[in-house]
Length: 69
Image 1 (cartoon, helix red, strand yellow):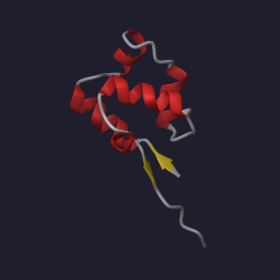
Image 2 (cartoon, helix red, strand yellow; image 1 turned 60 degrees about the horizontal axis):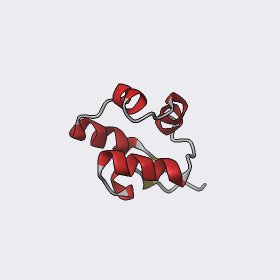
Image 3 (cartoon, rainbow, N blue to C red; image 1 turned 90 degrees about the vertical axis):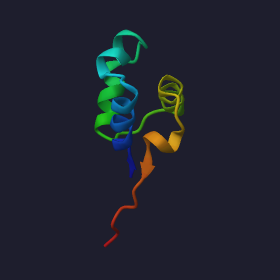
Image 4 (spheres, one colour; image 1 turned 90 degrees about the horizontal axis):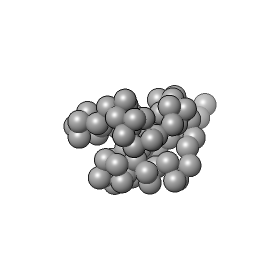
């Protein structure tokens, strides 16, 4: 599973709110919702967030291995 939990920490650290993403950077509210739910997003979206936040991909997302039973 891909987790975007680090994204919210980086946003807080950089002082960028969800409101700013929508209003200033024209990020779709639907994209923010997908990220909150750890749903799949395009590499274009990941690239856009890296540019906005001036960070690396690994700063905003991580792979978490599923427990296979």
